[in-house]
Length: 518
Figure 1 (cartoon, rainbow, N blue to C red):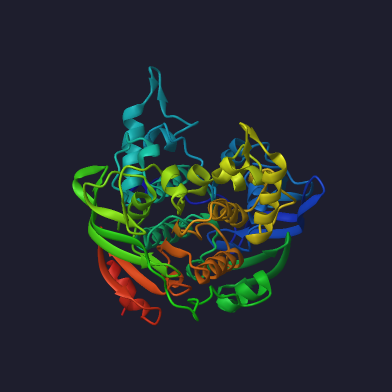
Figure 2 (figure 1 turned 90 degrees about the vertical axis):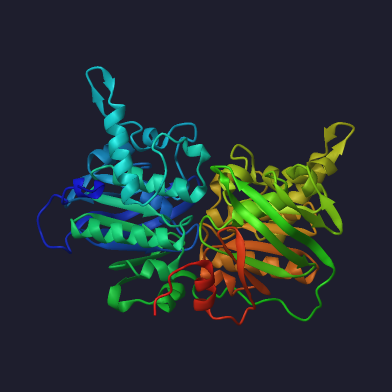
């Protein structure tokens, strides 16, 4: 029997279109800021209700209220038509509501098995039944097609693998309502297909799904009902047959945004980066090369997109150029000088900046303010006889907030108070403050909305015109055709093909190893 077969049909009577969970006139205030403005929202039994909206529109706030993380300022929540108030997430879970948060909430020092059963361990008179937990965890991982030992530490997994563990943990709960907040943000195409199959199986059993995603076309595939939030209020509702991509974008942002085009009107400069036969060992499998005899050149002003599936070697390649990892062959040349042994900080000082895949873990300090995060990488320029010039630091932070269009009350705002898109722009601004000659960006649009994504790509295009060399990786095919002058496809650690911006999507996908539908 599969792990998902253990899920029971959702309780309750009525047809498949029965509203099982409902928000009525929900208002949420944070100090003087009103995040939700009288929102009405319903979750239908055995259906996928998709919630669309830009970062800061109020989506995550509404989901936190529905899952017991927070309480509404006013309004009410109904479960099966009866008013209810959840004291915390445990209370909501006991009522059959589980949530997969946008930012991973796993304990990195614990095993996969321990994370899945954290807080609800399987016990017997002698203590925790680790054998049974391992069996159930292994069955869930097999269902998710994740080839990972249940005893492996979560901190040793890649971000995409951690995302699948997060989903497995939520699925292990006998939930009747499952909230998925950006569940595919770090998944490769094949893993997304697996997840969609699981969603179809769960809804067939009567489980209700709330789905939130910035991958609009992807979300359309699973949507039964759609609701659009903008500035804390509902702007549109529609059923599957009534909505399309243009409908979503129009109600989200008021205009049809695109991700731009490759900047033109200038000539590329001298080579900034030359990678020659670079080989990197896979830390999880020393017998395998995660990057295998790879060669690549990038010139000043050029924007190169690295496209590939999870495990193609994109992240490892970028991190090796930035100073993380130990190549076992080949070399990296920066502005004519061979690199070797420098730390990430030293390479940043030489003009190579990395925007990491996981901004929460590697890009931001959550206890610092927006201003402190922005100036962290360039703090040395504010030191005067061992003391920091607060005035100079404040001035730079204010300039960066304006330059990269961070929506924040000011430099003193907590970094955690910003939306995902604005946090990403803080990471970008932090690196730009060091005046790099090369920017490496690993999945720069992960977890941010179409408006913020457009702003990030526009900023990179503007800097390329000024001579910045840009290399960004993505697993989203549409992002390849935004601002890149050249698309380099990676497959199993090697470059399988290179394309210009006029290439066919099917050709790029096929070169990556994806199965392209006829």
